[in-house]
Length: 618
Image (tube, rainbow, N blue to C red; front, side, top):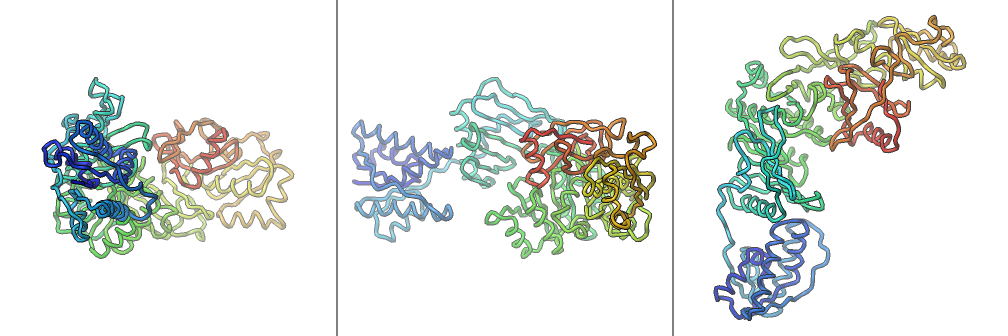
């Protein structure tokens, strides 16, 4: 008897089992090189199926040595493949069928489609039932207790976990024994088997080097070399189930969400409880008779079965959005909105009339709104997002109402400078917190009433200095003497260029900024040329004197370039590289500036860091 096994029965170990049982004893097993190649590729990707299949081939060789079976490798190894994974798999199955047909052998498979196709082509087939093990729980669950949010397992490292209350998690070792490769592979195989056999389990993502599985409430990521430097398993689960009434402002938020479809951003730092709050909102809306769907990658929100959870369609959330517009949900939870494509899809669905609730990483509530700038037309932002909810340590700490008014920005006095202004107000008190508008062709976010100098005055300094520096070649200093007047100190040889013929150039600048500017030389300074209240080289001043400039050490993370600026929370500063202006930013309450990687600003900043240039803020 000549048998040609396909990949499915080799992985399951079915051939050696049947040889040992006597059913296939004395048979000649013709192993297609295609099967070997496929198993080798899976093993190189770190997939347990590949290792299991190679182990089965070794068992067959052991049985050959005892005379129980004859093993022969036949056919040719496949060349490169193109197309989808399903198309490549079909091509490999076709090669295996050809091997069986050419040798008039019996094909052995546990793949129902493969078996039926082979029969249709007149090939003898032994069809075996797939090996199925009922998995009700996973082995890694033994590492969890009621306070465990995540478990982290890696080869040659002790088991680690994050445990504690929401917002107060501690990462620590939970075992003394170092895990070896065999143990990690066993846990990984158990996870994959559970995903493939349990009704509440599925593989969310399967790429060379990374597999993401959802099993009941657990989201499990399996990383393998060369993507990671060692086999690693990270399992995460929610530890808190909340309802909307458990949060501050619950009654007002219920009314706001129910009166009409809204655009909401739920913001907070990682682990703050954003997704937990989003789940509570989704469950509340669904209970009110609202059609709710989710867009997630990976799908890990713990919502009831009435809420359908969608992931990327064809690898694109844009296609998912197109499909959802046909489904017509009242609200869609988008977890999480991070890249430019995500913001564009979020905005497109919101402008189509769908209520949208997006989960966004941000260190301050206003930061989440600023992430829309440049991705959505400024005037459309309040139509896309009219509510911002900031979560900190599992609690709602800030809620903003976002709207548009045509008004004179706070701090400006010339009536002809009125413009559309995005007003960001405290949801509870109605007091304005920030204004966002275009100032001298720049989009600025100005805090209201949080410093001795108004936010618009700080921005005005920067814009005056930017305009003058574009003309002058020497040293420039700016001093505001009132909300609408300023003195600019320049070198003697720059006076004529700055003022322009007949004062035309400085008049143009005054008209754009709405500020009267008096241009003088440094020698005319009453203090002998020492700045007392303006900028030096374009800085806004940090510390006790306005001319201070400090060198900082930026940290490059996976998502941001973080610039620490201790003691300057809420101040607007300029960032420079070797005194060359890069950009202007507002320091967060935590004393840092975060620049999203991938942006033009971040690329310039990283380039400066790579070249060893001194990064300063002033």
